[in-house]
Image (cartoon, rainbow, N blue to C red; front, side):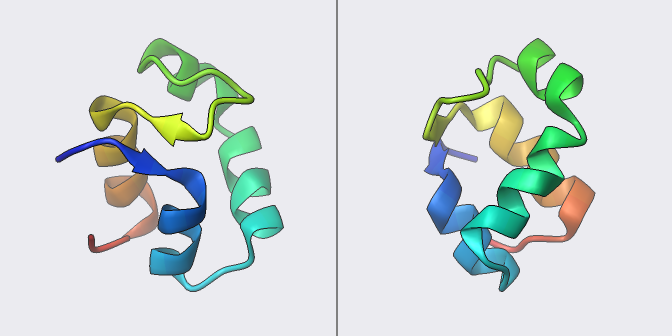
Length: 59
């Protein structure tokens, strides 16, 4: 898994960027432990892997 932008993950999930931001907001603590900051646009590989697994996103 490699780094990905939030907008890329939102597109892959088939949702609006704002909706995707809400999803991430529900898991803010978990994402911070994985190295993702709230305003960060480019997410680290660990966070991308977790998001893809949690929301069923295929990259």
